[in-house]
Each structure stands twice: as C-alpha cells, then as structure tokens.
Length: 100
Image (cartoon, rainbow, N blue to C red; front, side):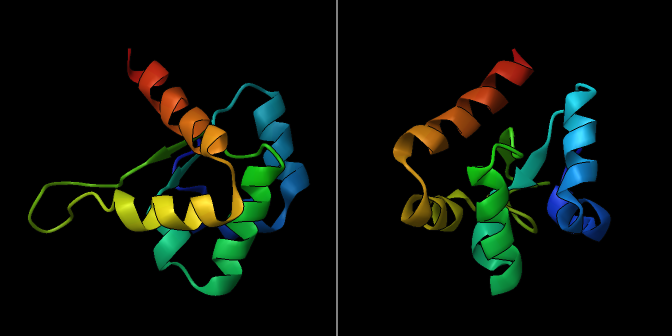
C-alpha cells in the first residue's frame, strides 16, 4: 500500500511513476481530509488522480479521538462536489475490503 500519496511530490507529479507502481500491484491511499485541507492546487490534482483511477482507497489518518480525530465530513463534501456518490462508495468499500 502506498499510503498518503499526497505527501510525496515524486508520486503526485509523476503519474507515469505512480501508474507503474499500480501496475506492479500497489494499492494507493489518500487521507480523506486532504481533499478538504490541502492547498487548492493539491486538492485539484487529487481529484484529477481520483477521476483517472489512480486512487484506490481513502483513510482518515486518525491516530486518536483527541489530538488527531477522523475528519471525514469535510473530505466527503469536497469529493462529492466533483465526483459521483458511486466513486465515494468505491473508495470506502475498497478500504473496508482491505481490512476484512
């Protein structure tokens, strides 16, 4: 799993490289809060990657409920502004299937 791909400029800027990892069987994960909290340029690029099939699942990056609680609501709103509910469902279902 390539976790937090939004934190790695080499993966964000080079979709060919990202695609080659995916072709090798890697799964990509993005923090859902990054769709809401990141700078506009990164959010826009994340939505482009999502639309192109480069993002397989989302996660919360939550470490606990006090200092790093999950922030799903704002990320969901941003995703649904540009993507279908089916896309959001796919991201959530992929995450659920991974932990089964």
